[in-house]
Image 1 (cartoon, rainbow, N blue to C red):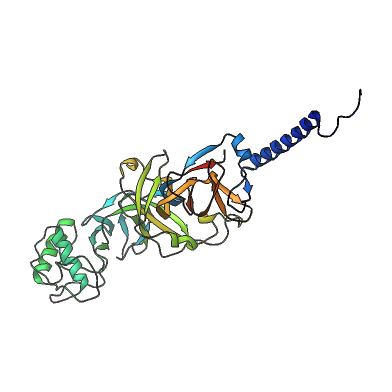
Image 2: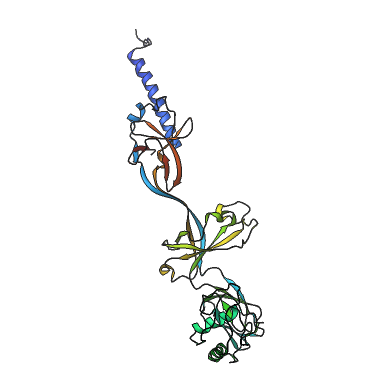
Amino acid sequence: MAGAEPEEGTEPDRRRTGRRQLLAVVAVLVVAGAAGGVVVSRTDNGERSAAAAKRVKVETALVARADLADTQEMNGTLGFGTERPFTGAKAGTVTWLPASGDTITRGRTLYKVDDRPVPVFFGATPLFRTLDKPGQTGSDVVVVAQNLRALGYDIDRIPGADSPLIDDGADRGRFTTMLAAALKRWQKQVGMKPTGRLEAGDVAVLPGQVRVGALSAQLGADAKAALMTLTSTAKAVTVPVAATEIGTVRKGTRVTVVLPDGKQTKGRVERISRIAVGGGQDDGGQGGGLQDGGAPKLDVTVLLSDTVDVRALDSAAVRVRFTTQTRKGVLTVPVGALVALSEGGYALQRPDGRLIAVETGMFARGLVEVRGEGLTSGTRVVVAS
């Protein structure tokens, strides 16, 4: 009859019912895709319904063995390492100073007092007394003997002078007439009064050759004051690291330094300061992880393995990439392959719809370490698109 409703179970009714079910399925898939992931439940036999999966084209990836490394990048400054203040030890008036950037080697003049040079010796013990009496012994005598010998002067054999430049606190070396004679010849050569004696402050004892940083005194200033800062002659990167995070950094740790032009060069941690600097909140207390301005920081010095790419730079802002954890030869998949289970945990989905329960490990570079029963390298799994 015209206008009559079709009976239940007729062909038109089945078409409408099928259409409503299809729209419902599409709506669920759209919502799930917009959320960027899917949460599924496993049936008792560990499988999920594959009916919908068979109708949808999916992306897949292979489970593969790889090395994962957890890295963190921090801000650093390329320069010549930490500047150390230098204070004069000889009374008088400063009459000459080196230029910022000068390199001072053994025997070279570091500064002048009353127009008399104060040269540099290398060693660990500063001169703390007058050396002029034959028979005097001590590590300061060893420093004088070793430096004169290194500068080409004959001092004969002096106990302790042939050992490395160390200061173990023991009385070693002996001030002899031959050492005094060599000292006198050297003094005449460098422009000092050739007395054959040395007083505290006549020479500056430094660990090795240095580069002059900033000058903190002017000509005519009191010589027993802060005169300049000194740095290493080797280019290095200084990285301020929060004291609470310094445990992740070790001496000898290898790092990657990203230069201003994007080039990368290798380096290693040479030294970690023992003095924390800063503290308080200079950024409004907002935090910021390892670079948190409010946390006390320790300076980490990184030496570059190759300085070719930085030979034209004396100072620059760089990024330093530290590797804090490494996992070698582990099974990995793209993070997008993880399927969150409604009962908790994760699984990987095979192309046929079956699920493999997995435990996750390290996440790095878009990959995740996975472990699961029967999971092997080469297994193909579905990846969320």
